[in-house]
Image (cartoon, rainbow, N blue to C red; front, side):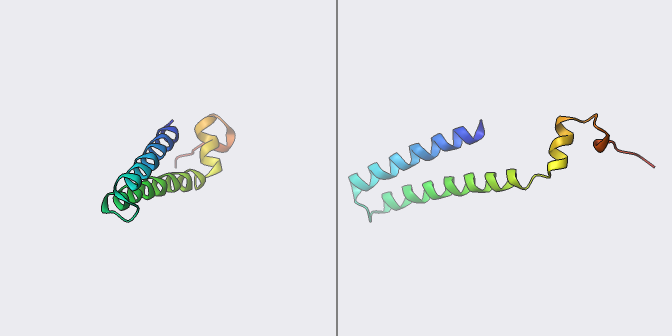
Length: 76
């Protein structure tokens, strides 16, 4: 869900950056700021994807099936 929202924000930011480039020129301060914002959003999407991939498969499994034998926690 959050990823969909971020993708929508990126698409809107790209449109805004393209509009700024047309209105003020590609080398204008406004266009550069708009494209920087697009880059920041894309970097955030990349960081979120990397964090998702680094999740431990066993931890994910235990979150889904906490009663499994592999997920039992014994206290001393």
